[in-house]
Length: 448
Image 1 (cartoon, rainbow, N blue to C red):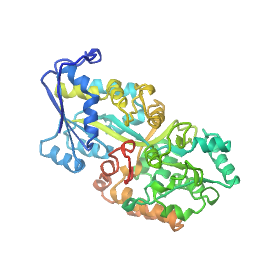
Image 2 (tube, rainbow, N blue to C red):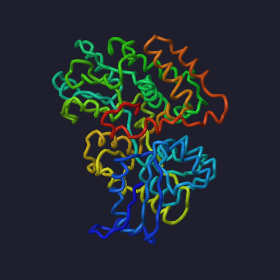
Image 3 (cartoon, helix red, strand yellow):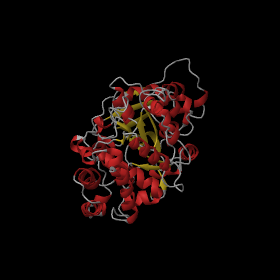
Image 4 (tube, helix red, strand yellow):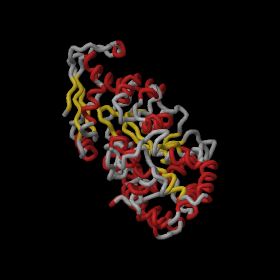
């Protein structure tokens, strides 16, 4: 457990004048976040604790999602918890132990986050939890050096991207690469590709209906988005050996992008730069590798972004708890954490200049856009039998065996748990694959 305490220091306490009467108080936080990030968080809020005199005790556990419900049920809940799953938040709200967010938190979220982000911290019309950290999946990796050498321009629309892919094919290059291999989680990249297109094609309402199965996989809108994925990532002219995507690991999929000897583009999350960098490649807008935003497909869906993050929920209404909760939802805290690197916030109050990492800065440009249409990773929100089961399995067969979309969606719909309770279950993705977050994984061996 890491503890922050007040100490005499030459710090500017002006940003914390609103937080009064906290000296000598203690606030506990429970999280799935582990070291070294716990110590980094302690550093990020050090000025706050120094100036207010409040103590923040934070405890991380790799059994967070199993332990938190037990602690809540046993009346041993922490004051605050960073919850990496909206589904888990909803289940905890059902216990009656989660406190509705205080006015200061609501004000911060209304000011600094998009409506889509706020919706994921809302349960049955009541707002409980402000967003904390975030990550972005809506990126396409490429080589700025190779693009410049070939005379290619980064596309900003879907039509431009497909036209570029055609030009690359005409030049004898492989436009897109992909890999579904990930050990026991094989198949997850394909779920991300479909999630990207469902959100881009149809927006939040259809996306969230698909997540809770009020809109089935066999719905024509979902099928049409899968057909678009097939025309993109199963197009032999663009990807070469389609079936080979199923047997290629996601780590190896884009490893040759810097040298221009493999494919030219890879749709993958922000963490992928860490994998490319392991070969010594430089990650920058003019370097061996960088990323661009995956273009929208429907002008009616503004700035679609698929990703994930944590949400700060409170189990106490004590003044000091509400004060810390408000501080953690502020642009002041988010900026202090961002400045320490390897962290992204969807808080629009964080100046982009605060980001040291250029990929994180790029991701924040879209995550923090107040007009963004944010979709939390769909497979992570679906029941385990689907999101971490039939969806991975069937999408792998779709690529590797040529299984038809009709048969794939039929099998996934049939696998959906029958009971409402099962439908609300959390598949654990937010813990197992969500932390360390992508930008902290030097050698990502897991899904996110």
